[in-house]
Length: 208
Image (cartoon, rainbow, N blue to C red):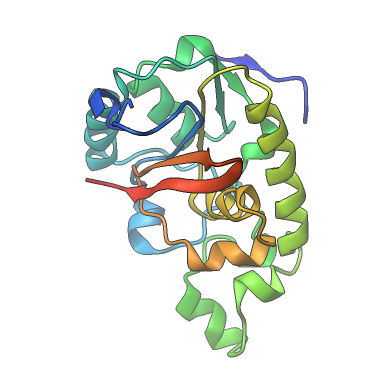
């Protein structure tokens, strides 16, 4: 897979939909066994399932009419494989800031398993012991946004569920915790744009 490393460390046929101006396309990686099982997958390098690879191939069809000035991808194999199956690996730059939330001691656990240990736990408020707090993930998202916004045209980012939810929240001026209100499925496309100079979520969680 031909992917360069960055320094810092849609259905396209429709605009590629009518009324959508060039902006930022976010793509969550396709299904892994851990995502299917609801396990928090931060830095564990889990590969796509067969179904995930099929979904990534379908993503390629949906993205085929987009032309990207910049493509960034998380270093995780599941994100890079999704990018590759979408046919964009040749122009992709690995961006460390696109890694998923570091879940620390909660890596690999489901929400139910975590709450059995800590009944009042909320990721978006508490973060993870030994991992990241929301503000730390928000700072990474801000650095990604700055890079995408400077692309000079439409840009794309292949990453993970919680990181992209934080990025979406930060795009529209919310704190990182605001990502808790933005559900995001595997193999989903989101489009960030602006309207009358106001940042907007032009499309969110398009997982058809």
